[in-house]
Amino acid sequence: MQSMEEVDLKQANILAAGANKKSVRIVNGLGSLMGSKSMVEVDFDKDSNMDYLLRRDNEEKEKFAKGRHISEMPWTLNNWHHHLNWLNMILTVFIPCIGWYLAFSGKAPLKLSTAIFSVVYYCVSGASITAGYHRLWAHRSYSARWPLRLFFAFFGASSVEGSIKWWGHSHRIHHRYTDTVRDPYDARRGLWFSHMGWMLLKPNPKYRARADIEDLANDWIVRFQHRHYILIMALMGFVVPMLCCGYLFNDYFGGLVYCGIIRVFCIQQATFCINSLAHYLGDQPFDDKRTPRDNWITALVTFGEGYHNFHHEFPTDYRNAIKWYQYDPTKVIIYCCSLVGLSYDLKKFSQNAIQQALVQQQQKKLDRQRAKLNWGPPLTDLPVWDKQEFLKQCEERNGLVVISGIVHDVSGYITEHPGGETLLQAALGKDATKAFNGGVYRHSNAAHNVLGTMRVAVVKEGEQQAIRFAARRGEVYKKEQ
Image (cartoon, rainbow, N blue to C red; front, side, top):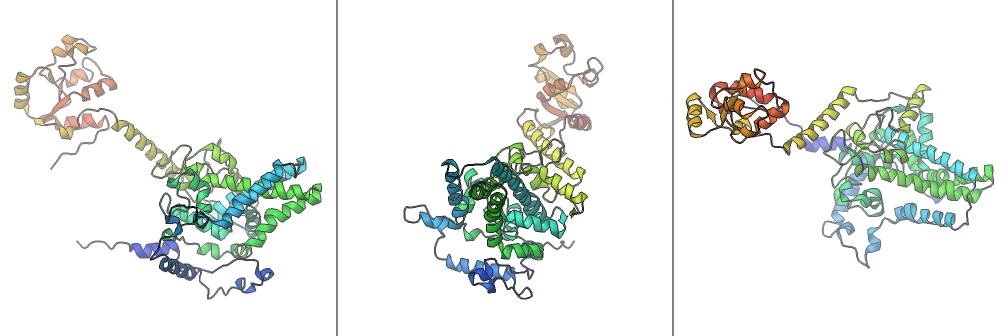
């Protein structure tokens, strides 16, 4: 018979990465404000994002072909500064430090009105990451009308976590290569690395990866936000909250410090917890082959993103929490938006598929516990005796009894038998199946398990009976051909 054609793995990976498509190349910057208008004027018919990435890949491969990348070198006093991604150091470390200094030094006293506004702005911008960046764009778990997408694009940028295009691409790579060297925030490299280290250190180009983001490039809002991300981020992240607090509460400086810098820091740290704590803390009710876990603590600080084990198993489900008591305000936001027509096509995995995963994981746990116990020798390891061999063995050794086609040596258990020694003595050398299964006593499940540890052989004429008996204990017996 001619073998079936197999999938071409190289071609399949090209398709998964979207490298077969002429995707739109989108660049960002401050445009004409920095004298770089040409960076914004993109010829969408000719420019290809994938061509650009492939070219950059080749350039980096040639660059490091003969020498090691800085990420592969040990840290020294002379090269430590080369290990760091200084842009991210400024955005996630230096600027927040300045904000906290101004707050704790008393140079920016906190007004109650500014604090309340900061919390509201935090919730709006944080939800724009979870409902917008994550569930809408990165996973396409639902669809949204342009007003809602525009809202998420602007307030998502205020969290200073990168553009939709960059964030969505990195996150798709994370799901495609979870717990591998190509995972941008590989949890196996430690809690600190998966939390912030991956952003603060220069990544090794050897492990560059790509995911298909053609759908992101085809969204005009994603293109607009990415091209003008630096300007939108600065305005929505710092200028707008400062002006709002100044206009409403006459607290421009407090607005910049608390609603700007400190709010951004808190959102970033909450988001980073999904990459770190959600891979270390909690349960794995759906699968444990990879590190993602479910825990309510992460859910509290991330608008419901803490049920990470479920999310990695069912990534296109618009929900993270599926039980009524689990905290997931993001799914509520998405659902409420659907009621007024702003969102639609909310995706959910079938309850049957979810229940299958739960049962399979429960079975895996039971199997591991089962493997630690002595269930007696499996039938396949026992010799097969005919009637003559059994009678011969009874002459040579005392204590043999047949139950359900299996020969048991009960000699060491006679004095321990709860039904008394004489009853067990009367069964020696005989078939006690009927007596064991209710003729005299209807023995308990525990009695069956104790009996299983005493097996010594299988009676040839009772093999089928033995197989049925073992099956009731969850054993699988395949007769060798």
